[in-house]
Length: 205
Image (cartoon, rainbow, N blue to C red; front, side, top):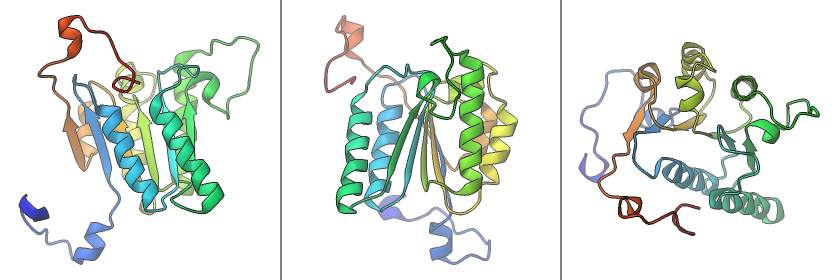
């Protein structure tokens, strides 16, 4: 598609403007590095357009601080202080899900936490609370059967308004791929770890 030209124009009765303002469901999957990084790059573009951003990290520990989190939260603070961009919320599974009732046991049941996280996301989609969502590593709860794939697909297909959703993680289920508008598979060609080099600041985190 050189210079942004589409391969064909669908006979859907929509104008070019209407078609380009449709909500997008994107999936970043595959074994290669860069799935989350690409999603957060898209989130930064959305922030620059003034879109309210909601980031929901599955699997990752609530205690693990990543560079993208610090950057996005700084952008959220910039919005609060200057009005630039859009508001940003960042939530992590387990103790990071602020809507879960706290217990004395710091180790929440992971499957239960994942289901609670998805339920909250579904509620927010129905209420149109954000314009851009990153569901980071959400393919894993789907793969492991913690969250029902068919329910997720139904909610995403029927979400109101113009809410963009990006889902990352390996082994995206076929039903999710079929429902998506944009699917990118990251494939590893080379990686420093192949040569025995461990993760580095500014590259992995």
